[in-house]
Length: 299
Image (cartoon, rainbow, N blue to C red; front, side, top):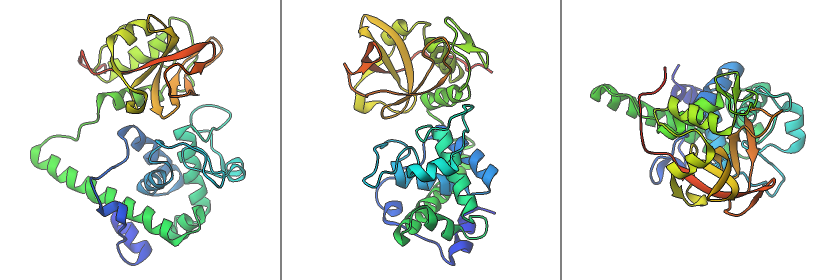
């Protein structure tokens, strides 16, 4: 059943929201959609509801500040609620509210336990006890459904598929490697990666050719400001622009995917998104957009 129909069955009528009707459509980033869908299938929750909650709570991870009430992370859980319901979905033993996978799967688990399969409105209300919140979530979910139907119809007419930005394709590829061990010089799927090996491999999957080392990748990418960095852009660390020793793939403000050292894994790491900020014994040197030298993607 289409989710728009599910929303109407759940509510008795089609919801609308101010955010859904004003301005240009702002849908979920492509790299998050597979996570919403997988979590939705596991816990029998419409994936667009998960995306809409993520949109309302943190603008798809673009605003990860702790709320005035103490809610934190990608889906804004209170610490006690997180402790009770947390799911380790990204191949680690300890779930993190700042991991998109863990947070989205935890939200789906919580909604299922709150009765989403039979009372979707009630489950959303249990997530945030406000009628305006339920209306906003349902409105945004319905907007996603309508937008995707329009895009699909246009794509069918033009016989083309909607395009995912190459940087987001690279991020999706890297997210599949979470939990892979760090090995210096490593660049082997599901076996071993170092920081720049992960970047080179992930972008090759997306059709972008990058050189091998962190310094070379810094030199090969277009400099952007910290507040211009989008998911799939790169953040570089070291002593200076001529002494770059580490690189990560930006996931959100102050959050990246990287492989740091022997004994670590491909995992999420926090950093201060400001040039010159400390990161261990290194500094944040700069941000880069890898947009050139496209090649045929790896199979």
